[in-house]
Length: 121
Image 1 (spheres, rainbow, N blue to C red):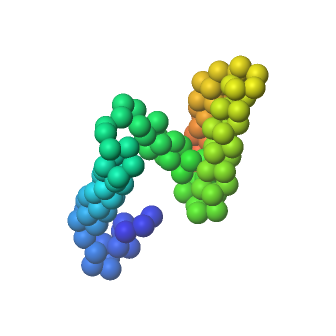
Image 2 (cartoon, one colour):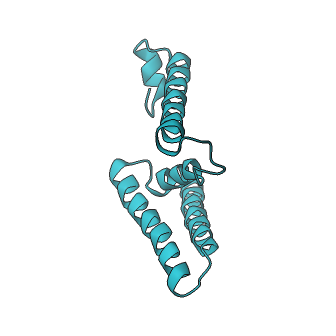
Image 3 (spheres, rainbow, N blue to C red):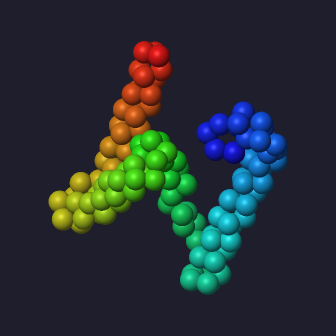
C-alpha cells in the first residue's frame, strides 16, 4: 500500500487487508527467526536473549528517515555505538548504559526535527 493508501484504494487494493496480511507475515517471520535461534543455536530458552533489537530497529528506521540508504547509515551509527560501548566498558570502565542515553538523544532530536517541520508547513 505504501505511503499513499488513497491511491491504493483507487487502484482496487484492499488497504486494511494488505496491512493486516503484512503484519501477520512479518510477525510469523520474526517468530520463525526467534524459534530458529532458540532451537538451533542455544537448545534452551534464555532470558532476555534478544536484547531489545526490535525497539532499536524502530529507532534506526526513524533516524534513517524510512529511506533504505538512511537506514543503512543509521544502523552503522548504532552498531558502532553498541560495539564501542562494550569496548569502552572493558578498557576504561564506562557504563554501557551511556549508549542508551545517546540513542535516546538521537531519537529525541529526530522527533523534534519532525515536529518543527510540521509546524512550518
